[in-house]
Length: 342
Image (cartoon, rainbow, N blue to C red; front, top):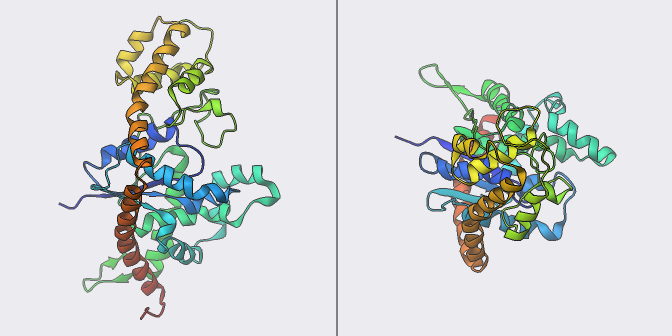
């Protein structure tokens, strides 16, 4: 039986942190056992906001290496860089030409980010959900792992595929049944660890863009920095830790991190820490975080020492990704009526 295909990726700008790992990449590793998995470094998305050109290539390599260090196996998954496959940009343009402007203007993330950029906001920031749709649709993805903050973008990809491409440009088979041009993906909602919150504000998601470095633990933070950040993490004056109390968001977040990073699970962690003070708990959490990240950091160091291996992985991933993407692109071009390429 053919495995369902999954596609996902993260931007290379900013250091990957515990939220990226526990909310996304760790789940990708498990999906390799049961799905046909494609994971890309979405560097084209990284330039929708002001970026540092001198860092982009290095950050892209670092992100790809961290995928592998976290357990993505290139023998079982296709690992590639988005901009290495030109079909992403070409399909995005084709989709642009059939996507209503007002669909993009209602995107919540655009509204939030546009306020920060003011008059300098780019067309790319408005349009990146269409590029995201192209990323997904190019690979005939059956499932796309999404958090709550990305569900709106996946819905847009589904609407573009169903309403703007398949309904308008699809054809019917000999039996009269419609033959879709693009596969319509389904969301794959992964719950445990899906929302890791900031160390400085338990009501805000841990973010690469937060100007406060102490708000997140990155995957490459050394042990002493991890310990320092956890020691300074926001808490409350109440003795004992618990889950599910809306008045104690930081407690819920830090205890949740301990449950995952220690491998003990929520029930055992809650029982262990029910009467514990913060002075006793924070060293436990720091130790669990350091030990959980140790193998990731060791593998990353090995990959960094052998850049040719990373180049080989990305070249092989590009070749496989391009073969799949090009087939989808040509199918879409044909449906839209373009002259076939010689």
